[in-house]
Length: 278
Ligand SMILES: Nc1ncnc2c1ncn2[C@@H]1O[C@H](COP(=O)(O)OP(=O)(O)O)[C@@H](O)[C@H]1O
Ligand SMILES: [Mg+2]
Figure 1 (tube, protein in one colour):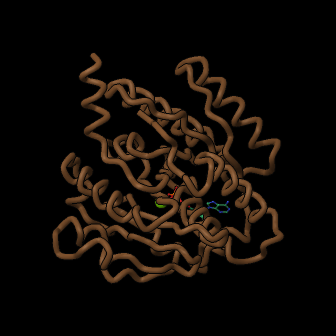
Figure 2 (tube, rainbow, N blue to C red):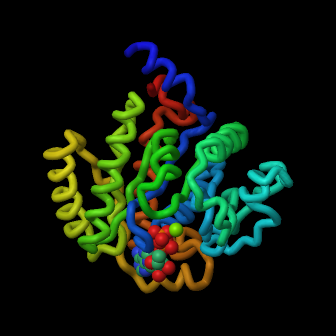
């Protein structure tokens, strides 16, 4: 048993900077919005941030960040570009590693490709204080393996019952994946998006936590919330992170609280990595 555990730990590709994976189960809940704005907020606080679009087949973080990447992870995986050739500086002051869109081959399950993606991230991570990954929806092998490789998973959901059910499904699937591979996965934390306010976010988080405690013996905390907002919607339409405008508005207050929470996951700054995480 001990050997199996050690082998599993040794096999893992480790990044040199804290690796936060933004995921959520359901599509359209705001994963990319949160990933892009968290990256912009951390960058505005002086952190060196790489946002990696890990929705390999249907990437869109470059659209929200309004950058035109010269090449993408798809080119790196095809062996025609070096990873650093694909990185572009986004208006929010963070670097973006874009992925391909409509790459049907990258939609297929491929363990070697996944490992290669993690090796690319590990290499690039030397230059950053944080690596933020934006994932596809669902609980496919890419999401689960990336979640297992991440230092923390942020689960984004809206109040929509289907989104809440999928958020629970993702936490459950990550828990089962970790158990299957003898990995000590930190409990994911929640980001309640498109809520009316703190009370609704707290209420939904308490309910979701209760289900997780009952069935998974996991107690996911609320890392933060974001209001449903015309300002946020307009920022997406404009392709400009809302983190860059109206610093005093509620949306940016919420975003700063999320950024604080994320940074508290990795104390003490700047010795960011937890000493040991099996
Ligand atoms: N807080 C919010 N306020 C207003 N609209 C939002 C908010 N969060 C997400 N949206 C809407 O949801 C859409 C999907 O967001 P996106 O980040 O692309 O989701 P995902 O990456 O989870 O598929 C956005 O284009 C936007 O219209
Ligand atoms: Mg997305």
